[in-house]
Image: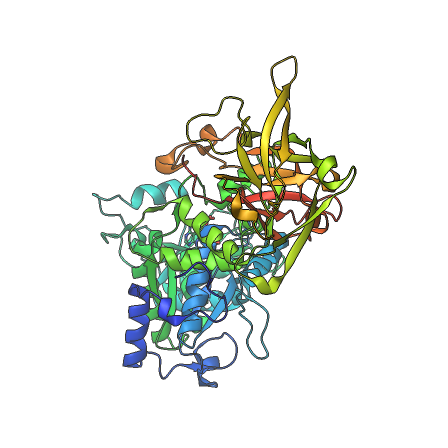
Length: 599
Ligand code: ATP
Ligand code: MG
């Protein structure tokens, strides 16, 4: 893909799509008509409800099911692009579903930011007459009914063993489990007990409902997994209606089935749960509770990004410990953090597309993510000059050539490849800010910028010849002097007659706008900060943020929050969406011009 054609979130070029195992599965299902008879009644529901509907016009249904217990991160972005992207590409629908079955950790703050992040990434879950995201807690009634059905059909029982007894009797990889003494009691007994659990007659943790499968199964997840527990906790949606809550392994397949999901895509750690997923679907379809055919679970490798942690718990710790300034700190791999850092939806979509999906875990190089941002910004970001480490340059023959106090107007394209965007305007004068590193008292070999006796071009301006410099008592260079070579103004006839090897960027002192610039670097110095149970906090980078006062060209005084620029020769910067105000701009380093990560 060329750098000038970033992928659009809504109309991707299908020729750039690389096939993968999920695409192959979906294409095969579509060819075989696996889901051709599936009905959709316009809302989630059980078999009877869906039977009242028409044949589903959505060819496939996928879902993105975050738990609202934190902010979404780059790993979620991969999952969002994958699930919404597959639905888009195959004439399907992707559901946004809050997996809010765990009452303790969930908050509305997280619900709202997740909605914002998915929309910002360019995706939409709304359907005609239905624009609210789904929430798993709306299915608690069904889950309860399904649990009673499992009990009465001999497929579930209430276990009153202690947690410790249960753990011991579960066995391990070598040792088969042992049946609970409660397992063989009658369905009537278990149903009565389960209703007591629901009615609050037993203490938290006193008993659990378990699926009755096989305590000797080689897959420990099939050794009668717990499916309901007692937990007196207030739920953000259902309030205090319930004191029993379904376990994730039980709730998730049911959520998928009620929503008529076809392809339920999750990360590899759920592979061992798949037999239970299928077992539960079989039982509930046999009982007439769920529509057939059931959804199927497929697993892909989660995203691991070098120098980054992507666990909500660990990210929350960074926020709580004030290592960063909130979830949207530009160093955070959260979607809100990446956005504030200057990432665009196009860049994140390109990244998801480029890394693809696989069945084996690996680490993606952080440079791949940065490359995607650089590519999309290169094509779109207006150019500007900025001096990050200013050193004064005095043009000693200025007054003689241009008249004391006069300035010379310069123009530059807003974008070198988009002349239709027009030009930017600024002035050159007697005193100019240049980059400190563009002057050398004793030039090393191959240095083509300013040193006494050398000529360079002030970009979009004149050729100058360095004539001298001044130092302070400590030996620091405080000023550089040069003369303007007449008739060398960029764009004027004959201006190229004086050949120079160096071109430097600058901002005239009389024209300068000051700006706070926040130079961000990686948050961790270790390539795999939390691999193998390592403590990521031990490799925090103490220099992940450096704040400087820079000089920028006057056009940047009115930079709008979120506006992205290429500071010529430096990299891509974004006007901070929180702190930048007109007249007092604040810029964040998004990404450098070249890949310097790890160097
Ligand atoms: P975390 O471990 O960060 O809390 P999670 O998997 O518990 O993540 P959920 O909110 O349950 O977070 O995840 C929602 C969806 O995002 C799931 O389908 C999950 O598979 C997917 N997901 C989460 N992390 C990643 C990742 N690093 N790479 C790809 N997909 C991910
Ligand atoms: Mg989770």
